[in-house]
Picture 1 (tube, rainbow, N blue to C red):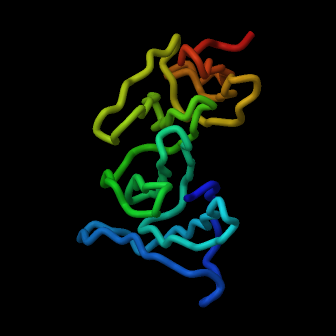
Picture 2: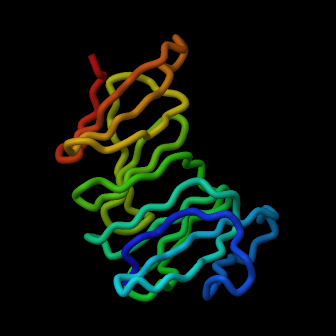
Length: 171
């Protein structure tokens, strides 16, 4: 069972057991992402994913891993590492997992929550129109976020409550 996942640079040949996750598509880029997976028995292996690396997150509650690249959003099972589903050409730039195990995605302007499948996403309301959203870190069940306010270009700090999923402007 997968416990941990992290983005790597291309490993040396033979350094890890490798599994390739490639979707046949004429629009694929030439970029690849390498993710090192650590299982609960501390064994390690590497997944190769089509597209430039963006983010990876593991949810023990949903028993899955999301891998975000420039070409795809991959959803894998933490039980066996098998591909469950994928989304082509995602516009997402950020990915995190809440302390309760829900995935949170952001493109440049909006947030979405994934509680089950990739096709069942919920948009989140925001107190401001946003641009250039960046996730930072979780602290006391609150996610620190920065963005620019759309059209005024003021740099803003926001906070996302991990229980209610309410977004507020930080004082």
